[in-house]
Length: 536
Image (tube, rainbow, N blue to C red; front, side):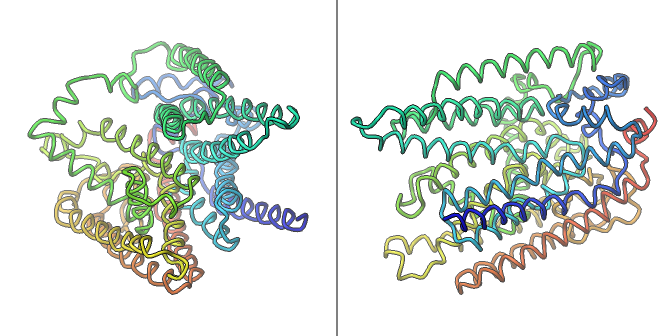
């Protein structure tokens, strides 16, 4: 037993070191933020150390929150050179994201009882998706938004174990074991509240995590007829955290943003009824459908189809179409949490960008073609879907002798997801790709799809990628073919080959995007935000 714990500790250490090194080393060749939200997230730390960036932040009208100040502030205090400071800010991001594969490994081995080799590969691939590593190269809120869903999932799994233990404590036993379990439940309930609100402290999109966590707890209570959390501790700490956020928010707007009226990135924009009238009108519904299809195409292609399998499994579980014996109750909870976070982020993104998409499709504002396949709002939840997809692949591909006849029907999930992926790729190629030609995009927002972008002439964050439509079609086709290959090798019980193939593709996309996009744009540093940061 001691040897097993020691081995697990070594594996956890190696996973962290690999993830940290992969993310950190390229960061030391970057020098400045290239986009407005990469500057905005540093605003509070900059203000507290004597750098008043209010003029550019107010001029652009975008509102960004303050949560990362907790680890940005010491770096601002210690390092005065802006270029060197930026490298260490990115290192701090890498420290955060490197915990993701560690958490996934713990979930895989402790709670889902995966074989160790599967757990190691799945943890590394899922925790080091190109989006995770690439977005850590910008001072966006993404590193925190990538980590927190996994922290919540792990906390929920631990709480579920406590609930099960409490049910097994005999009434004749001493109150001491029960007391320890209840204290741990109270502690984890408080932690769950603060962790979920911290996502909201880092970015307005974090509201999805707060509401999603609360919704999950309600569903769990109703469906299982048992309380997962200590309700009083959770509610009190949730209220305290939200009140504290309102206080910090007011300070941020008053001082960092100089009390000016801001226009963008505000939750109040979602209460405009005109958006919903336009969205569900005869002209709005086709735009909504195209946005859904484009974003789903990104989700499927970026996750090599496995994310789409994860979404299909989540849908099946959600509609009660999966036999309870096929996937464990813990996996079903991960599916429920993952679905809430994914579709919550999807809905928020569709609402936020609907006016932009409407203008694009009707020719009044043909710009930012990346919005047609926008993945950034979803990419923090895609690793969860990839994880569920991997688990399903492993479970479905088991030797048929270990699966009863009713459960063999679950093998249809892989061809079903492959067919949906093919349909999404065809729709993208015929409907969406043709209108993207020659239109600019935020090149940083589509980095995780960069298999063959022609970046010739690209110097800015917002620029024209000359072959973007054809490059995305090629990426979709290659990803679909690779998904078929992965299904085949999993069925032949050659999982290691599948894992290594995915690692190869993801590393290729990662390093290509670092060189092609991040280093290229950083070397020019022509954006207003880079120039402002380096001189203020």
